[in-house]
Amino acid sequence: MALSLDPDSAETLAALDGKRVALMLKPLRTPVILTLREGALIASDEGESDLAISATPGAVLSMLAERGGLELPAGKISLSGDVDLARRLQRAAERLNPDWDAPIARLFGDVAGHQIAKGLRGLFDYARSSAQSMLHNTTEYLREESRDLIASGELAEFTDAVDALRDDVERAAARLDRLAKR
Image (tube, rainbow, N blue to C red; front, top):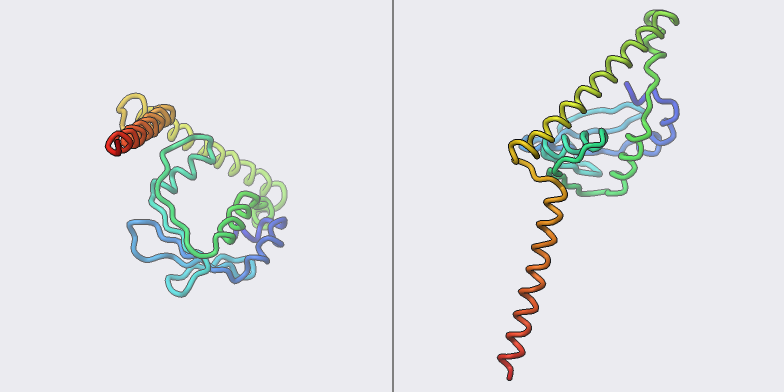
């Protein structure tokens, strides 16, 4: 329904018509095949796909958090098939801006529909803000209090130290090889 409520996305959606995407959320074993057909999204559980996306729940949570400006450790996402289709879908999703006022106004009239839509937008904004706040607080707790997650700065320091140690070992091995040849 949201797809049909965004008049600006009609051209983008027309270019994606008939494309099939297999979406598998691990640990589930059966993917959901999503097909865009004439501006509607159709879900099924069988058939071939143009693009296969497999993700862990943590990866999906990380992507949603990223949109809210938070940084969580990335989960595992794998793509196979038409990667250009994945880019086009990502751009289409970023630009999607459905007009929720029109269908609500048809049901309740212009004045009441506008007020109801405004109230629903406020409710969704509050829910989004609350979810982002909860996610931020949970991330901060996991990083600072329980130390179950490491801060991105600490991870960068650790990987830099590992790289430096690897380089030192390679130099020492090369030196030992030169000494052994003498």
